[in-house]
Image (spheres, rainbow, N blue to C red):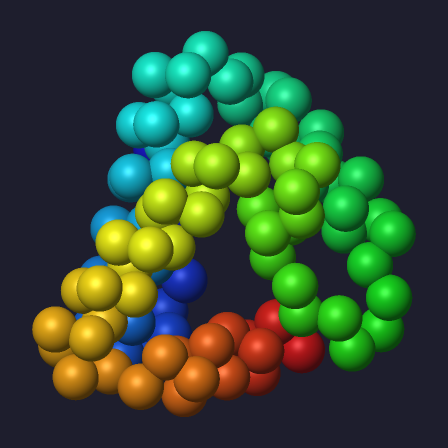
Length: 98
């Protein structure tokens, strides 16, 4: 089950949902366990330095690195089709994390 935060922009929320569905399906298909993903993410967040807005899935040591990269690729293609500026989209998340 997914929960998408209210980003005050339906297109942004759609992009997040698409990303999460793709990432979930391909991690399931690859046999990557949710508990391993959560463990990695929690450890990544515990080590996060102030001001760092990197996503855990962009770390090459993430167990779901390839799946995250593919989901991001698709997400970027859809954003382009919707006319969304990727940097503005990422900036919206940076503000949301703070």
